[in-house]
Length: 239
Image 1: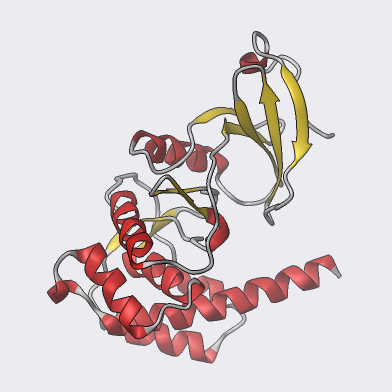
Image 2 (image 1 turned 180 degrees about the horizontal axis):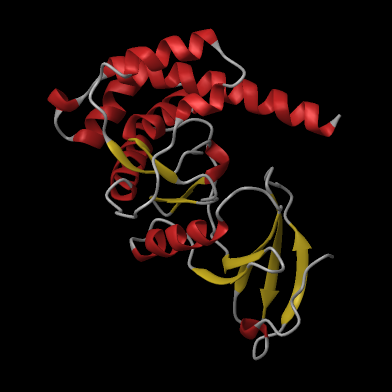
């Protein structure tokens, strides 16, 4: 296994007993489960790319402080390695009203984290020119902008349910964007009905007057296009 673990301080007094690849892998990392005498760790071999891993590590620290994610333990920029506590939990494809409410509450806590970074420029993601996406972006320019720290990749594989709590994983795309990007991602990924969308948004905002369904649907449209372009690019890269 291509992991530089010699001299890693956390394993000097508590050596690894078993190290195994996780059955489910991400697209930007190779993930391992490391089991020691006392603890289970997630080891992520990072793929060299343009992602700001130092910022990702800072975000995960802040998220852990608010009990939203795993505790980050070690970051080795030279060897593209990041280590955190291993989170137990279940990925779900369908959500009960209680789970939707808990997810909304957890997301609201994430969106309250303050970190300075440049806002996402979604328009840059749609090059070459994508007419439908640019049309949606022009409509969004007429709506009030609500910039928060967004996870930006809240598909079900990055959301863990455990003991009636929710935690997020994989923070590499986190950045400053409109809160509706995350809200729309969840609505799209979980295929929420109109009734479920209303319930989810009411649980998030606590005040129905703040709900903007137009923004939700425009961001759902953009997210769907982004996913199709991203997976198309991924397939072309593999070939």
